[in-house]
Length: 349
Image (cartoon, rainbow, N blue to C red):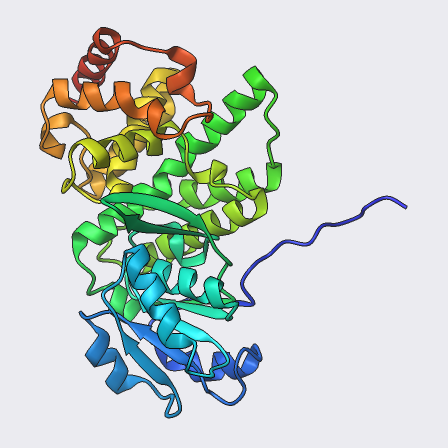
């Protein structure tokens, strides 16, 4: 008998709205994640105290953590072992949610993600990016069973975090192109559904006329980041959302720590990769969207010299050995990279 459908691992519920946090107790019951409300809640040190006061979960065990590292994820897991709870709820930005996803996966606990910022697509992805020994490592984790994005808190998030989220969503346009390139050149399998979902969310962000000051745009951005996470879960890898763009971002992070957020670094990587592909129509749209949202498009806007960005791009393929992108396809040396960057910047003027 032919296989007529496939099962896709996805959250039981996704809600993007103002006041979404207030819906958490109802969601836990409706999805049967925790009918009795006995859950652990992980909060960060920033908004944590304010959120703890507003939580309508009287039986919850609240842990305030310093998130973002593998050590903090292990520490949270150690605390959870004695809590005897039905699930873990991670409330915060991307670093907090990634820490909670890893800890929940280590213990086999259901996990709910409540996003108060939109810095990257980790809110619904099967990946946790955590620091270990001064390097950021991606770990496979369980996809959250439910996702809430509260626009009341997201509006208050630092603009740098929101710019990073915009950049992370836009990189899917380049990452999916790299995936298709690898399929054409090397025969790498492509999951058409995962690719379509990743591109659809990215294109919605690309062409939305609003800004991070508008709830309509923030909703579109949140949905795009959720779609990116779902696409990675379908594909079983980060392929739909990570290509040469993120190789460049990882290289920048390794060589020049402390620059703009990872998503914004990935966006300038996507801009360069799109230029290399010769897709001038998409390049113009991408450059315009990045300018509209205040993302860096040139070495100077990143705080780097032309030579520094050139060296990072030349180094980028080493960050993901075995992944085939436009960077590996073109095999450019520093002279050629510098020339392309210079031509690209002239186009942006």
